[in-house]
Image (cartoon, helix red, strand yellow):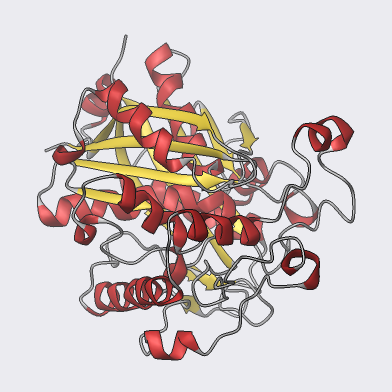
Length: 393
């Protein structure tokens, strides 16, 4: 069985997922095409030797409906015989693409594969595929009556772990401050590939970071999910989830180059990392956002590592209660968690976030000399992905 190694991981800048955002004029196919071109060109690989292109994408409708990885590969001008497929595990779609790429190499199905993630939330709005349809059906609703949106789940998580509004806002301000510091010190430079817009402008920095964010400013925001429908149902909730302590709607893409250790050696490419173990699990669909906790336990058990051996942790900041509840369950120095900020500051381009987290995690380990990093994220429906990354070299 061949070892699978990660040779490269890159991401686009994060653009605000609304009309007028820095990447909103870029068709999602062209956005991903620029990332695929970059990962091929900067590693000097023959694109015709790529076995498959696995793309995580949640909104598979509108401009992202025609197998976007296939269209992006063709848009990049690469050989037509290389296929692509689209993977959807909600917010974990990009991370799942990486898992499948690694598993494909380990199984001998692939020798050289690209795992990618894509979401243009300005052009394919979140939930636009449903158009009022019921995605659950009567049997699910009979088993789990009263399922709620993720924002309400975040409120329930905050209540269960006794998290205050002040804690949520302080954590969210920290996210912006850390991301701003990382940007100003150039720590994002190695992971970001600039994107050219249709008017010829080059976007090279994350648009989503707000350096002036403070807990005091966030405290002035009103709860976003305290509508009569839910306040009447949950009269004891102290509503505290706002736009400021939630992830941002974002446009973004990323790509990870995965290959067998033997192929990397034959091409003279230095492996940067490997996946020690990965895991997926489900959890309570009502709380929905708590999956990273059992997923972390599962992946640690598979890896044989202890929580104390981790040098960095990336937990997707879908909402501030997600990483804070995780921290309440594990004895980890908070400084190791999302040390370059998270989705509250950098945004959450659904299908691309798994690739973004991995790219940031890898660069953090390389910068600090750390060996092991954990990446995990909650997903709609009460699911979660987790992986442990080992820096090589």
